[in-house]
Length: 156
Image (cartoon, rainbow, N blue to C red):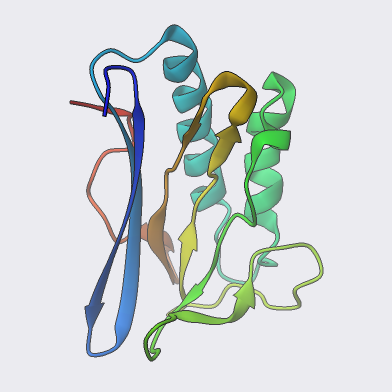
């Protein structure tokens, strides 16, 4: 590893076969101004997507919320994959359930559902990518992030 490298971390925890994931990016040394800028947009899109995870709404709405933040700054096309997918009781090696947060998925958010929200970005022409993801629970009062860890780029 060298100064300026970005390290993407994805951790998973399991209790009684229920899974939760957490994703963060770490920069070794000083991040570039562009890394800081992209991370700020990613954080805003992440929080907007979480806010859109409301009981009774279609599961594709968080994608639109993230796109509304990332699109105007030219970062939506840097998204790696879907904005999230459901988690729950599973058996190794996977924890995925049928719901995936994309246009065309017929699911709606319901209290008790758990899922990831992860607007991960890949900028190969700029030499870096960033991961940011949390496991979220849908509750009758709104979405609840299962992590209390901050959403800012981590520096080491």
